[in-house]
Image (tube, rainbow, N blue to C red; front, side):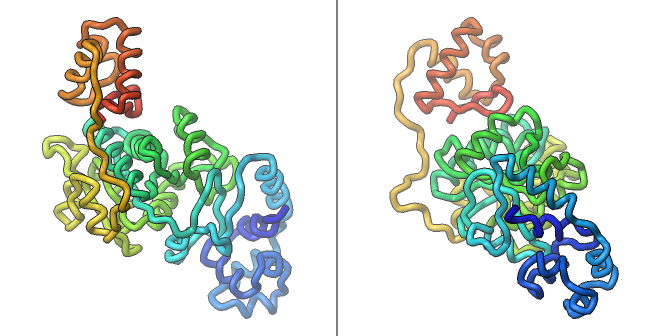
Length: 359
């Protein structure tokens, strides 16, 4: 029941993040704020009369009790804004969440870069996001994204497969897996990175949650890299938040004939840093490459005739496993086994949706 009163204060109507933090600064603890008199509340700078009346009249106990029980029955923990684990960069925005729900490990001062983009990504976009995330991870940079389908998922997996950390910022409760096909990613991030959210346990992935999630993605990061985005993409919202928060905005150029590239190419026209490789990001953010971490290069490996056939096929571009089976002379079982061997050799990498590409 450690966060009973934190949950209680957050549940009060008209008490948003800004009001919560003002009350915390004035009373030192949420409990004292909830038990304050009308006279004491009137002395809180910036607190409206309506918010004060709401605190005095709201019964916060049912939600606080239920939420405390839900957290206690889960693997999640709560990290409040007073904790050393709370991200320092997130504290720079005016409506920072008073606390976060967390699965995994969170370091308040880690260097992070966000990679975001279209849910309906092309193979070019998926491959590029995976490569950039892997290369950032190899340099000790944490990769932040929103765990959505497409580019977000590719970025998370790329960082994890690169031996680094990744943080997923959720637009739902910490105990909700969304999209549902990302169950394995959810588990992998809890083990080798972090999942965080400001939304209460059990919160559904409502549409209005995602713009709020996006401001946290950008706030956690030194810069935001956009890989594929249409003109109405939510990734452009993240880019706008990044600019408002004083973060750098990067963009991977897309195919000019593809509608899914218009948003990202528009960012480049407006002055976003064009990104082709990870060095472009590190240089702009003045991040020194790790002294003992050479940039990833193509490993040496020998190939069997079957492996060589599939490797040459993938050199022409990423393919889905069904397409590989159709275009090769191998059976489905032989293709699966050969792809696994190529992955283990570091020759290829698997992208979301059972797509494969040259590593």
